Image 1 (tube, helix red, strand yellow):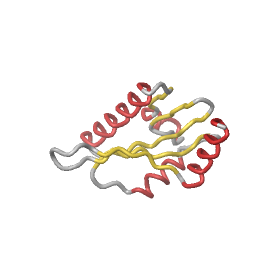
Image 2 (tube, rainbow, N blue to C red; image 1 turned 45 degrees about the vertical axis):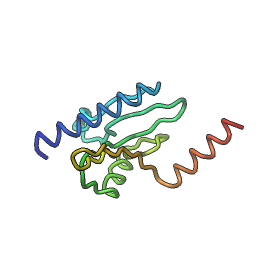
Image 3 (cartoon, helix red, strand yellow; image 1 turned 90 degrees about the vertical axis):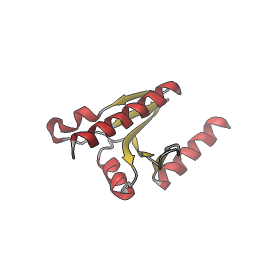
Image 4 (spheres, rainbow, N blue to C red; image 1 turned 180 degrees about the vertical axis):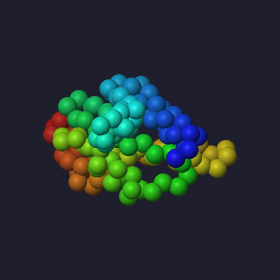
Length: 119
């Protein structure tokens, strides 16, 4: 991966961390730790109350979705929820599209959790 691609990825990670913090959540970029002792770490660790999300951030026009999900799963510690944040760049003049992708089982668990909290 070239320097320009690494810089683009780092910008996307910082943008996501800043968006999470602006929403009132604790978020920290973990990416510089990925090369330490061969252990995989998520790009961003997001904490929302007692929930922790291990987020892989991807930026670009062509995202390999399932490879990104596999990477998120590999970097998720016990008790964390794997997620992929995608920032898809569009044609000139179009705003970028930003998505967060979860496994279906985790999404349903979050829905059950939300139902209990709001009941």
